[in-house]
Length: 307
Image (cartoon, one colour):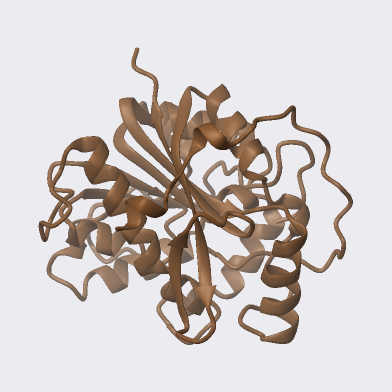
C-alpha cells in the first residue's frame, strides 16, 4: 500500500545547487534531538551511565554536528521517551517512518514485509539515534542494530530504555559519529539517518560518510524537511509559534535541503536515490501518512553503487 505512494526519483529534476535564500526568521532550530548532524550544502547554519553492557562511549567524539545543535538537544535529552514532550512529533511520525522503511528495505533485500521480523539477518546503523525511538522497533523487526549519537546523554537514555525490553538490549549503542565509524572501517547493509542532515555543518561530507558506511549494493535512507515557503509556514511558524508542538527555535529554515539538492548530494556520494515519499499530517486524525507531497517533510531511499 505504502509503495503506491512513493515517488520515482526520475521525475525530480536535479539543478545546480544555488546559495540558500536568506532565512525569513532567525529564530529556528529543529525538532529532532535525534543525532549528530547538519546544514545545507552551501551555508553552515547553527545548530548516560554505562549499565554494564559493552559499549563504545567516547566523551567528546569528533562530530559533524554544529555545537549549537548539540547544546540545544542536550537540554531536552531527558524527554526522549516522553510521548507528550518535545519529541511528541517524532513519536507520532514513527509508525509512518517505519512503514516506509519496511516497504523499501524488504523490497530491496527481498524480504517478506508481512513477517513479524522481516529485517532478520540485516545489519542496520541508526545515525543520530537520540534516545533510540527508531532503533528499538528496528531491533524488534529482527535487525542487528547499531545506534550512534554524538551526545553521551542520549546514548545513556537509549541504553536505560532498551533494558526494559528483552529484545532491545541487543542494540549496540555507541557515543560516536558516522565519521568515526568510517575511520573504524565499519559497514552495514542499511544506513539510516532520519531528521539529521539538517543539523550537520556539511551535508555533502556527511553523505559521503553515510555512503562509506554502506556495503556496495546496500541501502541508505535519509529524511529531512524541504526548504520551501510551505515548510517555513508549517514546520516553524505553525509548529513552534502557534501550536507549540515544538520548542521555539527547534528548526533553522536555512538548514533545510530541497529534494533536488539531497538527490544531487547523494548521487555525488555514490548513492542513487530510487524512491522518495512525503510525510503528511492529518489534523483531524492526528496521524501522519505517506504521500507524494514532498513540499514539507520527505524521505529518500537510495542504493549504493556496486564496486
